[in-house]
Image 1: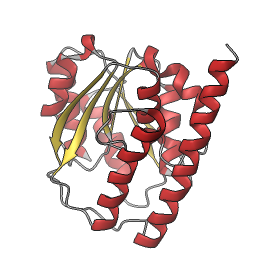
Image 2 (image 1 turned 45 degrees about the horizontal axis):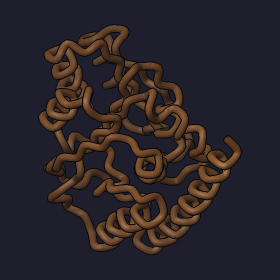
Image 3 (image 1 turned 60 degrees about the horizontal axis):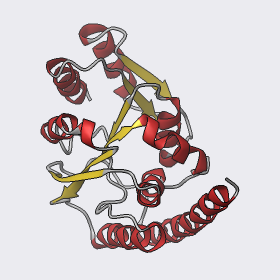
Image 4 (image 1 turned 180 degrees about the horizontal axis):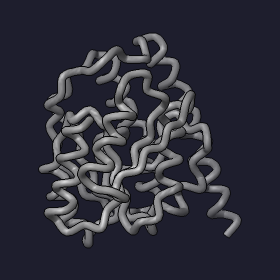
Length: 224
């Protein structure tokens, strides 16, 4: 965690970005919050914010972060240092031309069930939303806030995979999309919360949410 914060503070400072890093912690029982607080004070006072949300699932915590953000640009990534900062520099350099800029994961050390779900997510958003996002659930995304603020109102509060929903809505809304590959160089950390059978159930529930969100979006457009 200390390395991740140091790397991202460094790249933001080097690029001259007026930044704030907000960390959403679901209730760590190890020393993660203490490490974050120490880093906050030592490296970038006022630039790093820690929000502890005990019991809040991963999806809703991501959605909360998007809705609370007030900057012109929102960047989301996981905290396991799997992707590094170099791809972000390319996304940031091209930001003026696009609304949604994604690092699509490659070389992921993962099992067949997660690869299958990733592929299904890509096919689902293409069929339902006509979205051309290659990695629907990538946790490496730079988003123009003004382009997604209306889309966030359509995403349900209990969204299991808000990134997949936003990837789909980006297609139907005609957002300008830029995608590059980002190499997943990290070793798996900890134990995955979702066993394969549960992952399949979550995938089905997420597909149902995709259908409902697409329906609600059409209803909103029809209403004016």
